[in-house]
Length: 174
Image (cartoon, rainbow, N blue to C red):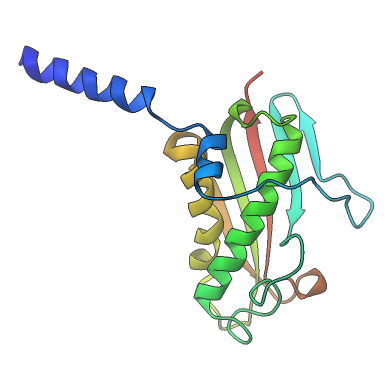
């Protein structure tokens, strides 16, 4: 019994000591964080209050890809929507990075993700589309910090025909 307890303790210490930081994981995935663009309207990209950061709705950033614009169930498949949501998560990472002054280790928890999917009335796989965003956040921040509460809802339209728009709340270390 003592041997098993020692082995379990060793495994836990080994896992903690070799866990990748968010920055290391981002580099491993070949992701390059970009400067945050200015909002296109009269709002802030993010607002800090206490130890929470509220991130405004984001679509894809940069030059749109073939999956970033269009309506799910009409123009895009669920798999394409998944990729669109993942692309939005990349943009959210840029804003998170700016919000924590370039120190992603300050992220204590991704608290909530609110995903809006531009979809036809009969499209019912919004939750599968939003996994594109959620999967990337968990991949980068790990299960403990990256797993979050989430809503995935269908919308009749989104600005500039975005396929996916995402809002987020994160908790940071004080």
